Image (cartoon, rainbow, N blue to C red; front, side, top):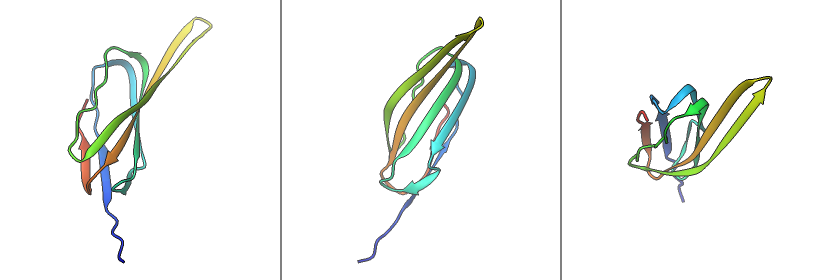
Length: 101
């Protein structure tokens, strides 16, 4: 029996005004097979001014895996970091692009 492996590539583009601060993203792994899971972390250093929505993408199931927030106040300096985590599950082979959010 011959096994077939299909590769799914996901590209992530981001532009948003939902934050005031620094926004960074991390997608792991960068490529995989259909049925593999990917993790997308969106980290905002500063204030999150509105909800960030990941648009629907044909061929990928996207789930919200959670949010973490770290707030610190050291010697009068306030900082806040919020990380949004999403699970991405491609269900067909191809190259995917996450449009700007």
